[in-house]
Every structure is written in C-alpha cells, then in structure tokens.
Amino acid sequence: MNGLWIMLRRALLALALCLGATPAFAGDKVVYHFDDAGLQGLKGLRNIRNHLDVAPDTKIVAVAHADGVDFLLEGAKDPKSGADYAPLISGLKAAGVTFEVCEITMKRRNLKKEQFNMDADFTPSGVVRITELQAREHYAYIKP
Picture (tube, rainbow, N blue to C red):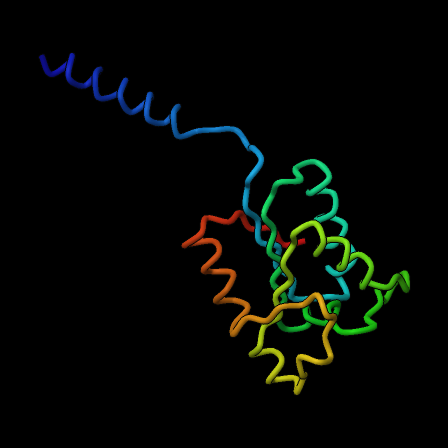
C-alpha cells in the first residue's frame, strides 16, 4: 500500500509540474535594470526593441538608478556612437515601455524632474521598485 501511495504522490507532483510549466507567451513581464548608462544605455534600449520585435505583448519596465539615469536626461547621447537616446526612448514608450527614474539618485545628484526626457516616469527608489516588480508582480529580470 505504501508503494502505491508513493507512486500516486509522484504522479500527482509530476502532473502539477507539467500544468505549471508553460512556455513563454505573449503577456510576459520583464524589468530591465539600468545602473550605468554609458555601458548599458544604447545596448539596453536595443535589447528592449529586439525583445518587443519578437514578443510585442511583453510588459516592460525599465528602471534606472545611480549612473543609469543618465540616458534618460534631456539631450542625452550615447558616449561611444553619439546616437541620441530620445528617439529610441520615445519609440519604446509608444510601444508601452515604462521608464522609471530613481528619486533617491535624483536627490543625491541634485537632479530635477525637468531635466529628464519627457517620457521618463519616477519612482521613490529604483532598487525597491525592482524588488517589487520581481517579488510581488513576478517580472523576469534582465540587466543589459
């Protein structure tokens, strides 16, 4: 009897795992983490664009703190190529991407909301926001 019970429990566990394991589908949620605009800005924006090209229904939030906020400043350009970030940001915003700037970073660096691209939103703490998105809202995490 114990052997039968063990087999039944294993079968139920396998069934539960199979039902819970679903392939990636439209409607995935992802947080992109930016903390160094010079290294991540252009690469990260291109990653997001490519992500949406393949999975356009993905909900994407880009959270920037520390030196990662720099690509969201008005007039910001990629330091290597000189590419202007604004058209990429605007296009992604139009596709539903949310860009959030850490207000702790702003305070530490004496930055004002008016200095940022008009497509930027703000969050009290970048690292807290990333934690909330991952732990509470089950967002996948990507750091370009």
